Amino acid sequence: MKLADTKATLSFSNGSPSVELPVYQGSVGPDVVDIRKLYAQTGMFTYDPGFLSTAACQSAITYIDGDKGELLYRGYPIEQLATNCDFMETCHLLLYGNLPNAAGKAEFTRRVTQHTMVNEQMQFFLRGFRRDAHPMAIMTGLVGALSAFYHDSTDITNPEHRDISAIRLIAKMPTLVAMAYKYTVGQPYMYPKNELSYAGNFLHMMFATPCEPYVVNPVIERAMDRIFTLHADHEQNASTSTVRLCGSSGTNPFAAIAAGVACLWGPAHGGANEACLNMLEDIQKMGGISKVGEFMEKVKDKSSGVKLMGFGHRVYKNYDPRAKLMQETCKEVLAELGLENDPLFKLAMALEKIALEDDYFVQRKLYPNVDFYSGIVQRAIGIPVPLFTAIFALARTVGWIAQLNEMIGDPEYKIGRPRQLFTGSVKRDVAPLAQR
View 1 (tube, rainbow, N blue to C red):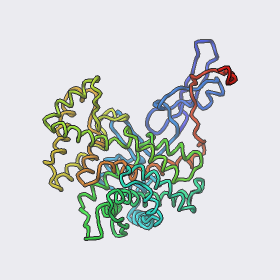
View 2: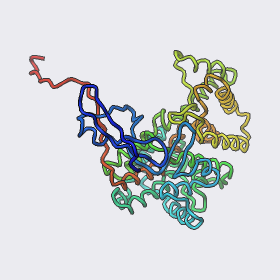
View 3: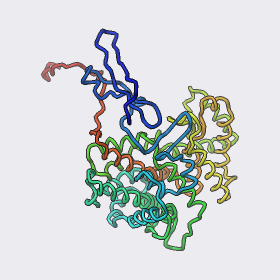
View 4: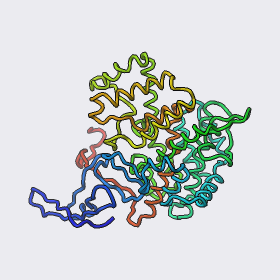
């Protein structure tokens, strides 16, 4: 970041002296007012619930322009990455800042492939969970438990430790998610296969059984890879900020990523695609397509309490660029599996049509978002709805690690310590028990 030509002047109506604050410019996006010395100069804090107007860090990884509907990983538009690169190339880009050449990609993929197995003890750890446990409850436990197995890479201040733990986490997340799924359905775990791609290996561990060979469908494999790429990072969202805040204390990378998994579980964040599919199933129970119009009228009525899940976005005030790509993949997968006439998918398309044409939704820019389409694709593939958020966590792991590593390497980084506006009781004395 560089110092801007202008400075910000903060003046007070009570006659207190004005304060001059530096203004910094990023390579793109809004300038920022540097308030680090505000408390020392004025004795005051700023108040910004949800950090909607506060830059908590400087980052060179991901940039979002919500007004334009633009998402860039290290400067590359998500549309180009999702079309011309696979997830392994995207991981390399996010972690190291550049797209690999053929030899670099082969070496990075080999490193990841060599770390896909998990310690056998993890199977016994899994047995402690109920069979009907939510996959995200299992994942928060399993990811945190990795730090108990890999003592040789838990020093967050050591760049070599950070690098090997990054490779281990990216490699093992598909194995852990597949194990969580197999456990809940009572099937034997399937070990990773080194000859398969990252996405192909995940599908094999999910859906193969020892009884017969499982052949990965290339259309489904490509769809899974695209889901991973589109969810790999998304700037300073709630779970990424959680990973940064957790990691700022110096905790090990596995614990910091486990914190991200826990944050992602929330229905307003990673659980949105699960909530979206649950909404579609609720409409189906009401009567399906014939009830779509009635449902949308309830959505428009604020007093009804009915929410439209999978539409609109906190950041994008335009069409979510990931949604366009996921829409293409959605159509490819439904066609490949012959599910264009599946009642739930027809219902989803009817919902999409209304949202794209009805003035109420168009004016409010409530376009379908990536959660809407990715949920439909995952259901078509055969992934159960409760597992959707775990797959999101799998994909986002590389983004979390890249952000964590960037923070640790930033000379300005400090342990996170937000301030507060205190509204409780002023100092008071404790009365003896008999006088209360």
